[in-house]
Amino acid sequence: MERGQVPLSYRCARTATKLLIVKKMEQTTTAIAVLIGITLLNVWLLRINRPTNYRGGEAKTMREEFRAYGLPAPVFYIVGVLKVGVALLFIGSIWLPQFLQPAAFVLSVLMLGAVGMHFRVSDPLQKSVPALFLLCLSLFLVIVESV
Image 1 (spheres, rainbow, N blue to C red):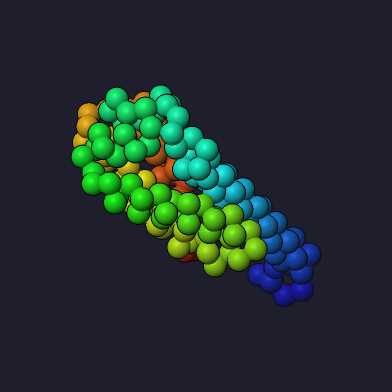
Image 2 (cartoon, rainbow, N blue to C red):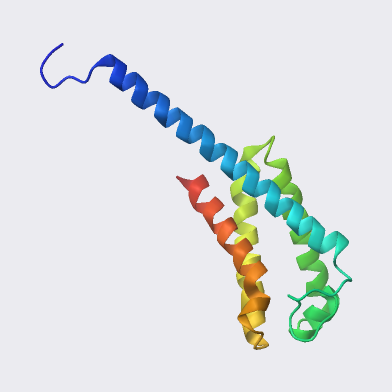
C-alpha cells in the first residue's frame, strides 16, 4: 500500500456505514410520511365534526373553525380535498417515493396558512401546536428529499 492511500477495508466500512445511514433515513422519512398521512385522514375524515382543544377561536367543528377565521365556505372544501389528497400521497409514497417531496411541500404551505390563521384570531399558542408540528415534519421532509 502506498503512503497516504486508505486501506480497502476502511473504504468498505465507510461505504457500508453510509449505506446504513441512507437506509435508516429512508425508514425515518417513510415513518414520518405514514404518521402525517394517518394524522391528516384522522382529522379530516374521523374528527371533522368533533370538538378538540386545538380548534381555532371558539369553534367546535372544522367548518366552524374556518368560519372563525373569516374564510368563505369554498375554502373549507378546497383545503379538505387538498389535505385528504396530500394524506393519500404521503401514504402512497411508501410505494412511489416521488410523491413524498411534492406532498410535503403542499402540506408545508397549508400548515403555514393554518398557523397564520391561529395567529389571526389571537389563539393561544397551544392551539397552534398540531399545525406547527406538521409544519416542522413536512419542512423536514422537503429538505431531506431535496438533498
